[in-house]
Image (cartoon, rainbow, N blue to C red; front, side, top):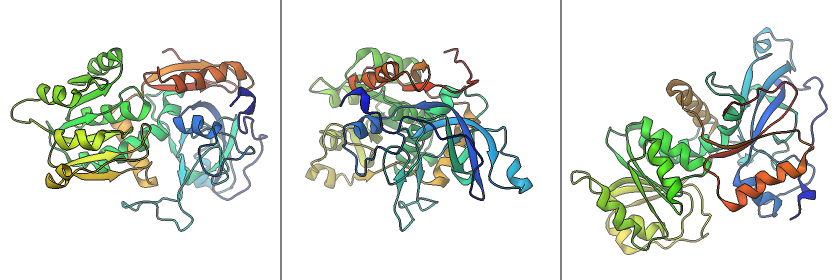
Length: 353
C-alpha cells in the first residue's frame, strides 16, 4: 500500500481530559511494530482509517481530568503507555468479557501513539524508568510486555535457576532482543538464531553464549553441539516465527521443556510430531500480556537498568511522511537490529544514541 494512506496519522487537539482519572499526555516518541505494517496491509481485523496507528509511546502528562489531589501527582511525570486493554491480571489470558484489544489502527481500541497528544486513563500508564531516554522508553511497551509473558510467565523463567539454557529464535527483532536481555539478567545461558551472521555476533557481544544461522539445514544440531555436557538440551525455546520450530525444538529441548510461541511470521500452521509428545514438550502460545505483567516488566527493567535496543531513531515531525515511510521500509526489509523509533513533539529530548 502506498505511503499516502497512513492510518489516522494526526494529533488530538490539546485540551482538558474529560473523564475522571484520565490524563492528557504530550507524546514525545513512538516506536514501530510489525503490527503497524500488517495494519497498513489490512491484515489485521477491524482496521479503520479514523484511528491513529502506533502501539508504543512515551510522553509527559500535562493535565488530569480530576481535581483529586492524588491524581495531580501525574502532572509533569514522564510515562509509558500500556499498549493493551481488557486484561487485568488473570494468568491464563484476557479476563474481560469484551476481550483483549491492542492500541492503534483498529476500531477495537480507538487510540494510537503516532500523534502529539493522547488522552488515557491513569491506570493504563507507568512512570517511565529514569535511566531510559525518550526513544528507549517508547520502544519498551509492546516488545517488553510480549517478551516478559513469553519468557517469564509461559516459559517459567521468572523462577529459573542460574544456568538454565534458553534458545531465542530470530534475534534482531524487538521482542527477541528483550527476551534475550531478560533471560541473561535472570542468569540463563542464551543462544540465538538468525539469518544474519552480523546479528548473531551483535547478540554475542550483548551476552549471548552463541548462535547459528537458521538458513543452514542442520542448525539444530549445530546449536546442540555448542551446549555443555552437563546441560545438553534447552530448557526453553522462545520463538516468534514458527515454521519448523516444533520439529527442531522436539530434538533440541529437554524432556518436559517448553516451546513458547509469541508469533508465527513464517507460517500460520505448525506440525506436532510424535517425538514432541514422547518428550512431554509443552507448546504454549503467548500474546502480549496483562496489566499486572506490564507493571512487573517495567519494574524489572527499572531494577536492572535494562535498555531496549534501538536500531534507528528518526527525529522529525509527524508531517514528514517520506521520512516516516523509511521506517516502515526498514521494518518490511527486516534489516533492523532492535526497535525503529520516531521522536517528535515540542521539546522532545534529542537522543544521543
